[in-house]
Image 1 (cartoon, helix red, strand yellow):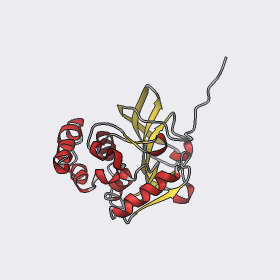
Image 2: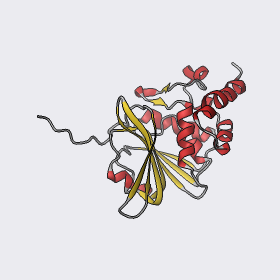
Image 3: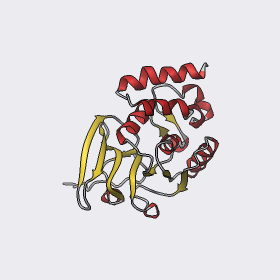
Image 4: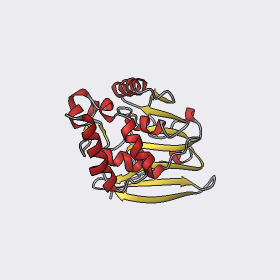
Length: 217
């Protein structure tokens, strides 16, 4: 497989047509080598428009979804990022090239080790992986500018929204299958948040995600 041709085709045939037009994001996809974050067994599929299986039944987002979410977040160089769900470390690597620092939380030990190894090998010195359950937030990180939830949530818990600084943004895929949408929540004041629905999509549920109250009759 010609890696660079496959990478070029991924950007030009999948990602750019999906309204990812921010040149900084497109350039970043050429810098961070996605194939280095894909399990060896799936390396030939690194640039295909599909989710890539990971250990424990988890998966990487499809490339165009990763790129679109990154574009919508508009991460600034001075901002701090908390990611919930490290996976292979690829999204953290992308975020680390735009942000001041990234802390990514991973509940699965095998993926925590994989992400840490991949990020170190890629030279992402401002990205750190910690083992733990971040579904309700991660208080040791303190208030942050950006929260990226790398998995879907039936609802966004208040504990996650409260961890945003004023002006901070949270990106998550919200809903229950088959109806989910990518959304951005922006903290406007200490008590108010703005919610924008971007597009419909689908992602596997985040492990231990907070569930809505369900009434039985």
